[in-house]
Length: 437
Image (cartoon, rainbow, N blue to C red; front, side, top):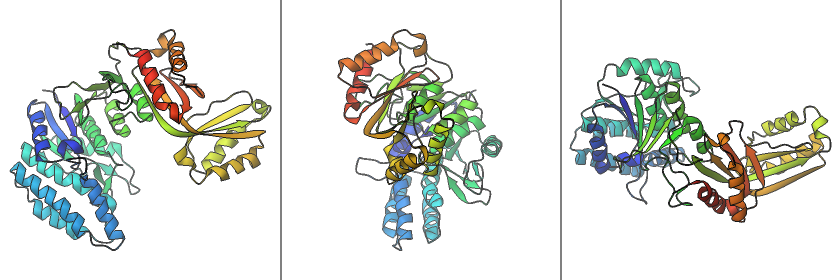
């Protein structure tokens, strides 16, 4: 019998009704033996995520306010879940212990992790699975950096003792026994680590969407689902924000050659999207199109730049001194352009420009704001004639002026820069040009 590892996101475990759906999914396949759960998410649009409420408790403590009211809301939700699920896990005792720890000096990691911890105990009892606390198994060093090799060793040894188990996501502990967490969305990472540790046949990541779509449905409502996508294609699209998966979750599964299946808890019969190293059969040239707004282009011109040794190195040293990361670096004979997210430039742009003027002495520096980047991604694009012609022809017909062009060395993506107000039109035009009925 094979092994399947499942991870369920916050919307999938928001209440007892959703947990019943999860149990039905788990019970439907005996190979689904290890389940990773997030903290309960929103039950309706105006609801709060448990993790957000826990962080709010921390904020109250830091500002010398009592967290009692907020913690009561959290407690009521877990007590109601225990009642509606018909299980007894001693939730009151756990809540009392957590409440006693809500005092000055308590870490945000500890507080936030309790959402997954309590949900994991409820889910394990409801499914009839063992409960496995990841503290002491998912390992971090003193500085909060994940220690993968020690994690795989400990997880593998522990999970061999359990035929079926529920493991809370998002957290582990450091060498001193302190609770440590991944960044938000880190339950995806836990699921991938567990999958590698037990040498799973597949890692099923269950959320509230039926896999990836070829474009943002808010821009292209009829966007087709992506049945198969390679890890490299996923990385390119995720970079542009088209991800329903924590990006660090890809690497443990990929290292172990474990496919990831993105599924929808509310549509369990939908096959979702398979992520693997093997390209699936495609009916379209591209795999998807995605983009992000709000970039700035800093264009630097200097006569005979190409003969000035170390010019780009000194330019990048200036960026480093301001802790600014760049996205792309298109160059010409006498020009170099920096594509930078506006979020990095807040409060730093003018000082950085003055440093560029002083240290590099360019002939001119121009800044273009309100730029958007759009990536057209497909593993087979480099073997197809006329891809660029079709892309730019579609943009021309749509009246979109392309301000920047960059093709990655992988030859599986073409990135263009357009004005923010042309963003949606450009994505729509590219999708229509490549996606067949």
